[in-house]
Amino acid sequence: MTMVDSPKVLAISWGRMQVEGLPEGKDFKLWPGGGRPWDWNETGTRHKPGIQPADVEELLEHGATTIVLSRGMDLVLQVDPATTELLRERDVEVRVAGTEEAVRIYNELAGSTPVGGLFHSTC
Image (cartoon, rainbow, N blue to C red; front, side, top):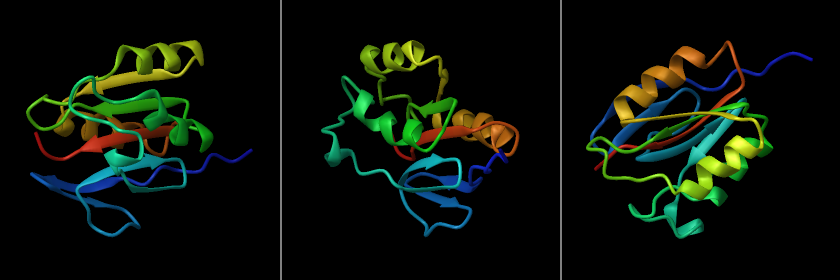
């Protein structure tokens, strides 16, 4: 089976991201073969308790075996412990970092492994 590359993040600044093949936006869900804007209201995500298990489900459905979670530019966004537990239970490697570092990690993995990511471009 041929691996489908994840789209690379081309640029990031406060409140703005450019992703390969997608319209410019603020927050993104990215996975092997595509992505879309990340709307926190879909899952009730807030800065605390943070990224929810439901936020990563779509990435898993698209075949991500490594997931990069960004905590925002100022590390305000938390990661709900239930989310990391879910990923560990499914043997998914998880990397958590501030957004700029998360983008660097994600872009390094894109093209070599089925990587997904959640990116928050503010706080």
